[in-house]
Image 1 (cartoon, protein in one colour):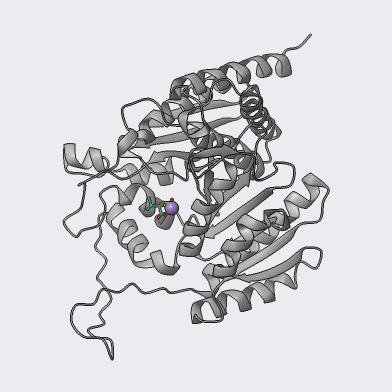
Image 2 (spheres, rainbow, N blue to C red):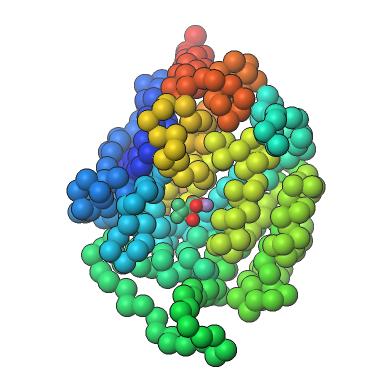
Length: 396
Ligand code: IPM
Ligand code: MN
């Protein structure tokens, strides 16, 4: 029986509400599966900062680093919760972990479920076909346009300062100028691109279908992207069995909505990945459905792609499925990393519970066209998980 240490960071606003539902489900797996979880919750985020003057209790970063097999995060960000330097309070708990734990691959699957309709022009329609669309976007997670903020947040998480880069003027620009560097390194690109090829290989063997890896960049304009694409071409030589394609980010956004069936695994630099994954969530039924895994060589963190939605906080109405699917990704990656077939089985059970819940179609939150509450959805999926765990693991 495998036992895993899970650190839970509910964070701000609706992050706390969706985390409650994930915890209900984790509790069911703790009781009815062969896995066991030792769970530690840590309060954190912008609201916590306004209440206490700190983003999370001292030692939290070290706890995530040294005492956790996996981390689950709700959402970070709260109105008016700003650090003295103007950064959003709570950055240590998300960007600090992504950078400080070297979680270089941000995996954002775009998997469609039967029963989900697409909200466009305020109406629900069947637009993208679940049988045709199953892709994964991999966002580089430690450098690019986020590099300075990531580094600042990671340094702050261990109580250190990060001196700002000095550039005092830009030729041709006058008056007030703010700027963000966008470094893209060989080693940072190599590891995430290789991760993309390995994921494509894994999908090839589990789906029994050829997979394609698409490199998305803006190498017609940007030097960092030229390096990214050059490294993509080099690494592709090591994976002759994986098809490849390349796209510029502007054209890619068009193809993503128009021909998503042509995509399998996609690798993108940090900011392009941030933007493209919000767009891609529309294919899944919206941000309430979009889950993510932040994976490094030694650590992993799972979180919904959505934020803390202050407007809906406290109402109990947001969709918890993005958070619940992030828990499913946690089971999946515990399985991959530890070669643990029980964890893999739990990820399959949770995925099919989400799928059955949605195909019944009775308890949907407002974003999917229903009026169920956050906890109605969590209760329904927990109940389905409990029944399938009992039937799967019962000895008769
Ligand atoms: C995301 C979010 C974060 C990001 C914010 C909350 C810092 O938008 O996970 O996509 O920009 O990476
Ligand atoms: Mn984002």
